[in-house]
Length: 111
Image 1 (spheres, helix red, strand yellow):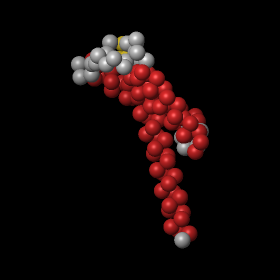
Image 2: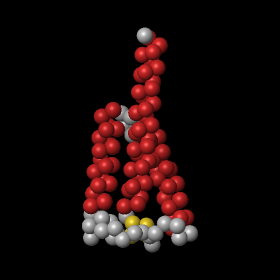
Image 3: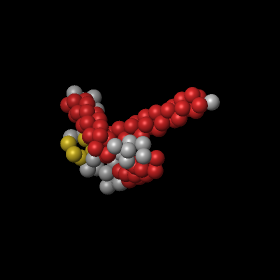
């Protein structure tokens, strides 16, 4: 059992949460709404994965970095965490870009 990929995912999620907390971009700006958005986004992507697995499109590889813990056939433990990270980084990046654009717009109006 190798926990390399799982550890990398957890460290990455932790890093995004620290960045989010520091700048109050997503979860720390509107926790309820953000948690709902993350939950829905992760659930939708997981549903797509499950359909793709059922159709034989997605199959688990033999990567030595996977933990080997399977939640379902061809669905490793790391997959839902990756999908959560994907949603989190997307929303944090979106809010960061929105904030930068907003500040630039305000500076242009003033200057």
